[in-house]
Length: 329
Image (tube, rainbow, N blue to C red):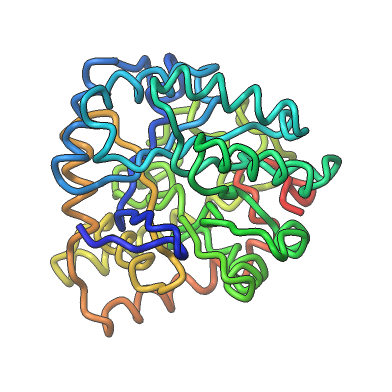
């Protein structure tokens, strides 16, 4: 598995990372299985997938606890990334919440300590002052961001930031319009999350009826579905029309849609790692195979051109869940 160094930190992260939100207990993907989760994390390390991403918010710390159990005796093989949530970004809160995460993770240090969603009401300088003191104490190695928009990126000038974790995929290219260029200009590489668009880019779902109701919670879908946190029309017709195009493309060229989705992100030099969840060893191995597949540039140019129309209609709000401008700032 290829690895990239983050700045001059010496931290090297694998091109594919393992997301652990599914290990947070019961959720829309079903109940989690601690044993399967631990086996999946071990399999990731065995295959060179070293970046393990979690958050205090996932199951109120349950995901962090599972990661901590899985890394007993193998901590040195992993790059652990966890997140402090939006309301906890004042100096004293950051320190306290980091200590709580360290305890749940059963580790002395966190490699990447990330702001989960930036808070415009809490000065970024106050949060980073806490990060700096945590670094001096050896409790974190680098500060990092998730969901930083253009204004937030501007406020980070002069700060050392490992990455900007963004929702980004072949059918969700909104971040390309403003956020990724701003992140690139600031020298902050991207970690792409939701690369398979919650299963839409696996070919598993060919029409809206195929998607379990509990998963119809993003702005991909109409707001009339109960889980949605927006009041918009969504893009169901356009997305499923594109999936038809994608599946025809894959059939003609002997490709799997997940391979195409991963290749889309691998081609972008500013994307240092692709964050994909896996509930089992089988799912992880499928993700690894998809990530490692090589697709000729000419073919990728063709399918990327086909997704441009989706990008054009989706506006500038890169938030996958919240409408009316979203939470990016």
